[in-house]
Image (cartoon, rainbow, N blue to C red; front, side, top):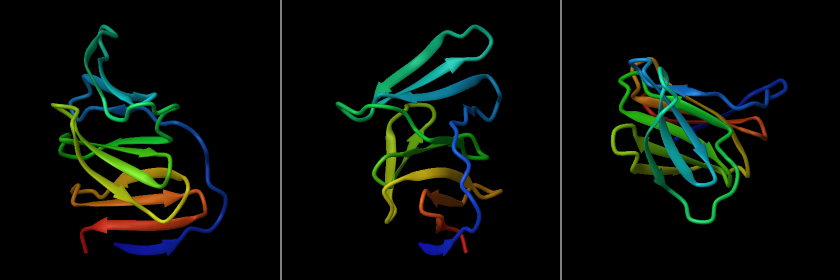
Length: 126
């Protein structure tokens, strides 16, 4: 993991994560991840990831290959979730209370995490 610092103000907001084929939307609320069909609004699948969790993810991002959903959640954690099974593949921890934004690199081999403090963390890649 590499670390840096972002300058300027951080923008707050919740981003919707859309599947690579643009057919589904991913949501994370109160510890449960949901996959929703865009055409009908029908819930295709859901899975509880964290018992007793409240709130949602500050940011959601689908990898370029469409196989992984990154969820920036409280406590400086990022959950990497399989988009087919909705199971957690991996949990990343950064040294920050709040993670604001996650973004995959162009090829999906790296992930950048922006913390509320302005710190930037880089996982994978070169």
